[in-house]
Length: 287
Image (tube, rainbow, N blue to C red; front, side, top):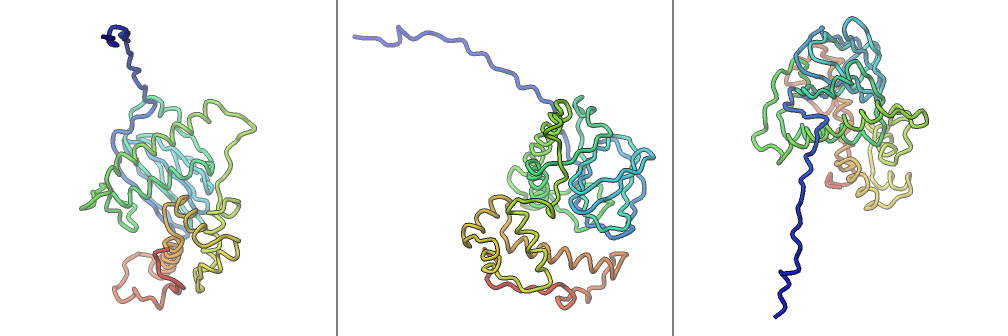
């Protein structure tokens, strides 16, 4: 009887050990701050890394005695034990801040570095914020936050996805730093100048925050079918069109509230839809 086992060659397999350029061991804080004009956060320092990303408008970051203008779409690395402060100037910027513990030697290459993050990498920043919102109890506005607390039912694997997204972002930025090609320079990622369809949708939604909004009108303006446009936007951003529209309206309402009550100590009676941008949809918000 034919015995196939006799012809089987015994192979030796070698396991390749994966080298880690970055190993983020702990997340300290995650902030998304919509700042009012002339906002100033006092200088501080801590023994872990911090990144500052200007998501809307320009902001000023003081680092080691130097006042740095961080343009919209740019990210700044602040190394451990480096004094720094935040100043908004005469604009109302949105600033995304993540602080973390990472002792990998590769991090030193980012010390005092500032990058313009291209559109192809922005999804990683968005993923970090989305996962953080579903994993931790994030206050609406607390620049003095010192501890992240898990939600009662946190997103499955949320902490690991935040870690993975940060490490991936750093690897991509490090490639640019070490292999800079003048013909492929980073560009400032501004929704206002972007030709991406998802950014065009956000621009239109932002222009409608004080008006009634109809999905049919949006589709007609962009020459797309309703299902096609909604599916595309959800895939690109992780949120529905109506969820994004509602968030834009809420953000604008918060901005107006901050102007009315700069100390952010709001009386309970102030929360009234009469003072907020008009919330009106032509369909239910499940689209």
